[in-house]
Image 1 (tube, rainbow, N blue to C red):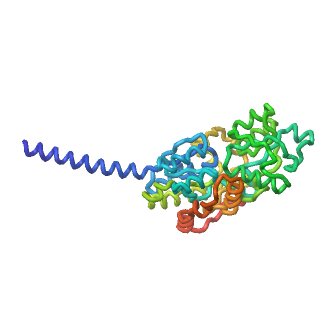
Image 2 (image 1 turned 120 degrees about the horizontal axis):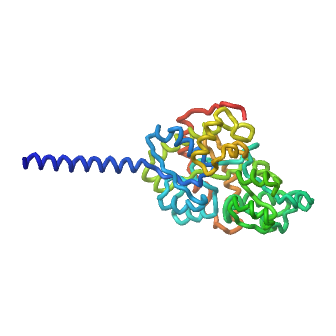
Image 3 (image 1 turned 180 degrees about the vertical axis):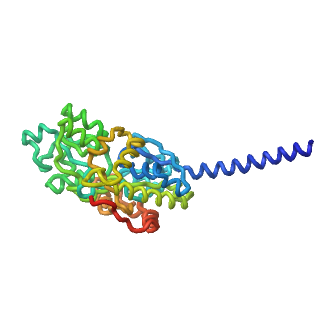
Length: 349
């Protein structure tokens, strides 16, 4: 009996050791994705809902952040494997400090007809004729979501095209939902605003579209996908698999686009996924807003990143030693697109 007992204890010990090993390996496969829960996170949500991550042997966990900028420290430390958001001066400064975050794929761009960002002006200023174009923006209080990101660069680019510069406006930094009460209280005169806030402002009659981002800079890269340095170096195979699932989801999302909206053949399924995963729970809102576009191969619009980098350098937010190629690694997305083959759109946008 003593021998049996010893063998039983040994056997259980081995079983626990094997179980522990398997458990740690399973945990290693669970990836953490930082998200703000917006409609522009659609490819992440689709890849999970459609089982594309599972096909690659991956399990993901979504972590919600108030803003994309707040996920950067977690990306740098490796607490978050994958994140997304706008490019910023903070990204270049982090890389200069040796934090190897990389831009690896497209997440949201303003393709022609898909200008989901717009420069808005308070309705009374438009109606009175005080503001007719960007040439009239001198001295105006203009709201943007944050300081030091690519939105500021886009606003400057639009102003320069009209004979002004970023220094001619009075910037106000407010989260997009806060643009609504700011307009209502006449605390701001204009803004660079993103959907769904753009559509809500139009519905309320508080502001009008002056120009959309795709008209200012076609295919302007509003948001990108980031990989953390820890994910890149410690899980290179999972980084490769993740991108295959993501590009597959991007293409499914693109199939749902038509005429600037989610109105394609599989729109109902995409909207159902967005209602489940995003903070917008009304299907009608997803149908009404102008949708962001995503390159079907996940490629990046590098000229827009270069333009934003130049703005950060000119305004002395970065010293310029870290350049755009230093923060971009498209090897994962190019390999994924090649593995999946050429994309054939299922509808005419």
